[in-house]
Structures are given as structure tokens and as C-alpha cells.
Amino acid sequence: MDDDGNYRFDISGFIVLPGVLSPGEVATCNEAIDQMLSGGDDLPPTAGACDSLVQLRDHPVLAGYAESLCGEGFRLDTGPVLLGAGGKADGRLSGGGEWRDWSRAYFHRNGVRHCQGLMAVWALCDVGSGDGGLVVIPASHNSEVETPEGLLSGVDDMGLLEQPILQAGDLLLCADALVRGVQPWHGAGPSRLLSYGFANKHVRPHDWSNLDADDTYSWAVDLPSAERAVLHDPQREGQPAVVRPEGGTSRIDLEPGIYHPSIYVRNPDAAIDEKEFYHWDLCGHLLVKGAMDAEWLAAANEAIEANEDRIVRESRDGDKPSVRLQGANRSKMAEVWSLPEPHCEPLRRMIAHPEVVSRLNWMMGSGYEATKCDAFCSKPGAAGIHLHAGGTTQSELNHYTFRNGRCYCEYVNVAWQLRDVTAADGGFCYIPGSHKTAYAMPAGILSADDDMGMIKHLEMEAGDLLIFLAGAQTHGALPWTGAEDRRCVLLQYRSRNLSWESASARKRR
View (cartoon, rainbow, N blue to C red):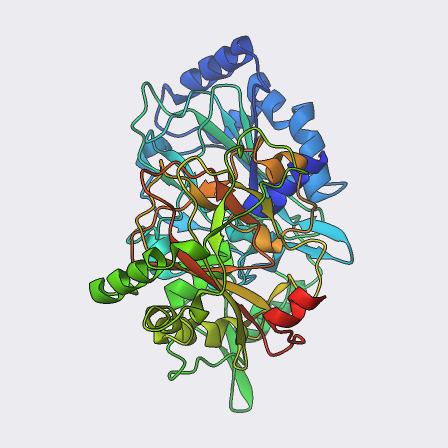
């Protein structure tokens, strides 16, 4: 994989390789699948014997990427599977990076990437927006927070679900730890998404029955059930048995599954919304709706308008060329918390507002300090801001870590929206999941001229509160094209772990 591919896969957990198959090869594969489906809705167990499907399984492009991701000696784990065949598209999601299944995890250790499992999906038909089929939650392979059940069940997608757009002949690769699922098909013609699963040679396969029979423990047939369950059993199907101590012996739970106890005990007084925690850990930002009431919002806007003489024009990052981000000079009003009374009052309310404090407590831990408070006031046509920040090269200023149920970060930005921001207006943009990447930002991301489909824009309403990782999440701004001036107030907080320097001291340096 090249540098761009590594960056994309590491952040998003999937990558699309366009046009790997020619139209003729796509047609040949579809003909083979049609013949196999003539007797039902599922591919028969012997589907792998078809020459065209074997060629897909062993395709040199797929093999090269599988070796790069899963390691030398990778092996076939599942497939071929026709996604959504036979009505098997209930919308439920699976996967997730909270490593309860270590054999399918994605992680970095000692400078080496480990992708234990890989799903390869051949697009043998076009997949447009809203067609259904495969859906994913980008960056979820890196999440260390348990995926909310409502998200897995499809009750609430939290705005995180994404449907990859594919053309016939494309190859999609995703980490097995990525949260994903299959939705009902609405596209033209039948769905033709054929998947294969691959795994690192050292991890246990999905289908344990494929393991060779072993008579090493033939003597164990008369042992109690708990002892038999603990011994290697290649014929075991489904989830393993759960064995627990009970008095002076051990017993088996009635239902199989995964039992992996933790010392992590949730604090009922922490006021943590578990869905917010998941979204924060997954994406690197959090949007709090309606944090300001109408009266407060009006007072904050009036404070900016009454002090327009303090607005200054900024440079346009002329040393970082970009086509997409071009525009006139941006405008900002610095240190708005020091405006004369009464205009400072609605802005100082932001410093320790409960909506902020309640979240910074679990994001950073107590002892954080606000270090600046600036207002963005750019006029229509103002230039964007180059993408900056990110989790690499990691330092004390930009790291994000999750340990023992707590997240740790040293810089957090809080942006109070004083006007609506629509998709057409520009403004804040970001790359979800970029706070965890181990790869350097490509030049096309920095300039936004080749964003690899990864840069996202966030729609917001006046009164909303945006919290994002200042040093770890890659973010910037698209050119401002709204009908009115851009208007939001940004406060930056640093943790108790960093040395503090006042704004006046920074100016003297």
C-alpha cells in the first residue's frame, strides 16, 4: 500500500480500489453467480469451485493488499458470500474496535500495523447513494469504547452510518473490526456484492469446524463437562462455552458466549452520556445541540456587532498553496472575553458553562484552563483554513489515549455557534477518526485539493456547541460562502498536565 492508502485505511478502516475488474470480467462473474442462484437465493457450498469466483478469491490485487494488511501467510477465512442474498439484510451492524474479539482486532504495536482480519467486497454492480447494501461506520475499527446497542440494532445511527459508493469492478477492503452491516437493496437490478474474509495466519478462524480433527484428548471423553470445555475441541461450533468457578469446582453457563470481566466500574455520578462518549472517541468531536437560548444568543451577537472596530483581517496561509481553499482574507476578533461591559458578559458565560464543564471533566479530567477566546467574523468569500493537527507525530500536545475507561487529551477547542451553518456555507471541516492515525497527513489532505473523500463538513444551528480535539483531530475550514458573515466564538482549553503561558506572555516572545 502507498502512503495515501495507508493513511486512508488507518483512519477510516476501509478503502475502495476503483476498476480492478474489467466490464468483461464483471459480466463473467455475474453469469456464474446467476447460474449458481438458479436453485435458490444463496450461493451453494461449492460456489468456490467456480473458476471465475476462484479468480476473484485469488486475484493478485486482492492478494497484495491482503498480505500488506494481514501479514505474510494470510489465509482465506470466509466466503464467497453474496451480501444481502436471501433477504439477509436486517440492518443490524456487527464489528467494533473495543477488542472483545482480539483475533479480529486492528492495532499498532512497536511501529508495526496489525490487521488481524480483513473483509474484501467485490462490487459486481453499481451502488449509488441510497441503494442499500453494505454500510459502514468509518473509524470504528479504532474505537476502544463499546458500540451502543441502539447503533448496532439500527434504532439510532447517530449520523455516523455511511454507504460506500461503488461502481461495478471496484474492490472494497475493510478491517474486520470495522462496524458494518447490510441494508435492504433498492438499486436497479439485483444486488451483486460478493465478499471474502481473510485472516492473519496466527488467529483462530470464524468456522472452528475447519480445524483438523485431533485425537490428542481422546482420553477426556469421561471427564466432567467443564474440564472437557476447557480442552481443545476442533469440532466445537458457534460460541465457546463459558466456564465459571463455583465453590470448589467449576461449572458451565447454560448459554455460550464471551465472558471477559473487567475492573472498569462505571461511576453513576459521572454524568457521562454513553452515546456521546462513543461519538467523541470515534470521531474526535462532539456537537451539543441548543446550548444557548435565544436571549443569550442575541446578546452574544449584539456584543460582536457593537465592537466591529476590533475585527482584524488575517493572512491566508500563502505559504501553503491550495485551489479549493482560495478566497479573500479571513477576519477575527481576538480575546472577546475582554470586551467592555456589558458586551463581555454573554461571552464570559461560555468559559465555565455547565454544558462545557460536564464534558471537559470526562474528556480531560479536572484542572483544565481556558487560554483564549476569539470570534470568527469572516465575510462571504473569505478563504478557508488549511487542514492541520492530527495524531501523528504524536506528542504531549496532540495525543489522544483511552485507558481503563477514561480518555486523555491535552487540548480541546469549544466553538459556540452564533449563526446557522448550512452545507453550502463552508466553515469548519474535519476528518473523523484522524486523532488516532499512525500515518502522516498526505499533501492533498493538507490543501483539501485531494481529500480522498475523507474531509467532512458539519452543519450547525445558531446556539449549538461544537467541541473538538484541538491538537489531535485533523481539522480546518472551507471557504466561507454564506450570505452573512461567519460568526462563532472559539475557546481553547489545555489540561492541567501542560505548562501554562498567558496570552500576553506569548505575544512578548
